Image (cartoon, rainbow, N blue to C red; front, top):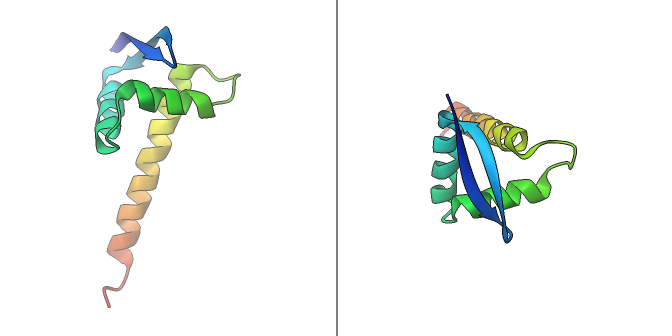
Length: 82
């Protein structure tokens, strides 16, 4: 199920529609970084290609972050603990 939320990003209001699982992860990532969800969204917005819509950019960012985290965790388990 998708959920539409409004945020203020760099002084302007915008609405973003994402699945609830993506909202949960976006909020959790913002908390981990000690920033607001709007600040995280603004960072992702600033880094995206203008041809990509914001909701898609958020999903891709969260997927890439999860894959990187998984890679880091599996790499640390594979290392020799000398």
